[in-house]
Amino acid sequence: MLAYLLNLATLICINAVLAITLNFIMGYAGIFSLSHAIFFGVGAYTAAFFATHYSASLFLAMPVAMVVAGLLSLVLALPALRVRGEYFVAASLGLQVLGVTVFSEWKSVTGGLGGVIGIPPVELFGYAVTDPTQFFLLALACLIPVLLITSALLRSSFGRNLKAIRDSESAAHAFGKNVAAIKTLSVVVSSALAAVAGTLYAFYLGFINVESFMLDTSVLLMAMVIIGGTGTLLGPIVGAVLLMLLPSLFSYMSFLPQTEIGAIQQIAYGVVMVLLMIYRPGGIVGSGKRSQA
Amino acid sequence: MLLLQLLINGLQVGALYALIAVGFSLIFGSTKVFHFAHGSTFTIAAYVFYYLYSVAQMHWVLAILAATVAAVLFGVLLDRFVYAPIQLHEGSFFTVFVASFGIGIVVQNLIGIIFGRSFVSVSTSLSQSIEVASGLFVSPLSGIAIVIAGLFFWGLQFFLMRTHVGMGLRALSENPELIRAYGLSPRRLSTIVFALGSLLVVPAAILSAASTGLNPAIGHHVMLISLAATIVGGVGSLRGAACAGLMLGMAENLALLYFEPQWSEAITFIVLFLFILFRPSGFFGRAITS
Figure (cartoon, one colour):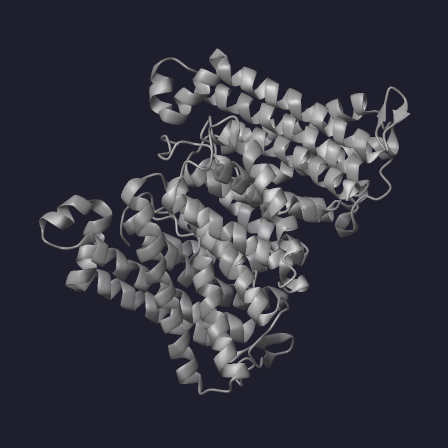
């Protein structure tokens, strides 16, 4: 039972990091990305590659993963950020599809559909972390700085610029703000921090494959942010906790057919998304009325 | 010969994509609803037809009628009970999009539970390919697909240009307030748009069921295509969406000359990306109708 709870708590931490970083661009800059799972994946594959070939030290693997994800997002964000609204949703959807194809075809790095196996346990100061309790503490120790960094950024002038862009891109532009630079920087920060979650995920499972980084994951992350409340600090965490607890809740209901549990979960969060949009578009944490986003 | 074969396949697939994309574009252009669940309408129509025709052994006319009713009903009910309440208090396209996406997830999983997640296909005497020249296989369905797509466009064009309701629809996309001033109800017109848009996916759904087969996840693919075609063709332009759908179908098939089949979806998005980069207004700019 304790092992089960620790596993759940660790996965909640990892997903909370992802939800917080997605909310950073979605809730504050109004960039509705459907490709967050790709940057999660880039982080995970980079960390896995680095750990199996060079060193399993967290202090080396994690920064490398962050830099790779950040740089890649820079390359991809520059063209995509020229467009907004429905165009950006379409572009990011395209990026997600492309990314999955690359993940499953670039066999020398990603292991194709089979994935990367035998990722060594993560090392901290030469000490290998294998105990689940210690790994949970490590995940928590990553979640807290991510939360602090994003909230500090949002309170700074950079955060105010982001909100200005969300509320009116043309007004921010007229005010002399470099809209493109601010948006690009926010995407890079968000992707680099998503790689933190990717690194943790790769080391935690010791095995990764493309299944974890598909459109479903991007949608699940989006659902976490939206259900929790976009543009709030607590929202993504609440969303991550709720959506991660949902599966376990369903597996306790013994009257449900075991083989259909996965589908029933998906139906449940689909229904929740629809009902929230009708009755409470601001999410659980947000105010009833959603601010212009 | 391979080139010719791929061209013919591309034309068939493209004609179906064009039908799907025009339905999406019609709905998006005139009501501003980002109807992501359009792919679900396709899945529902296709599975209703598959079940009645292949499993329950009904006459094909009845099966097609039932699929049509199911698709139109689904579209209209969504508009009434999901999109309309959201639009009452919220204008943001993203809120509607999220709800629509949620519906897509629900439908895909329900279909998976009811019909299973594996591939199913409807076999008819028309789906058999005939070798017309050495190495060139053509099934009667390709011809039917192209003719039906042409007929539907002509019908839609006629409806929008010549009938009162059609003109009302074109006005709706330009100025909903004016519609109200003239005593027409935007709500009623929106219902008609959803019925029409949903109707347009039915032939594509049935022909796909009979040619390439179905699985519950097909709705996603259909949605990606309509979205890409709408943007490549120019938002709001029906002619653009039709051309773009046709082009994407061709591109997907012709790409097989150089790439492995698993890259076909990626090809669609490379085309989309290029358009977003170099010509974000699409083929035909931002004209509102055809």
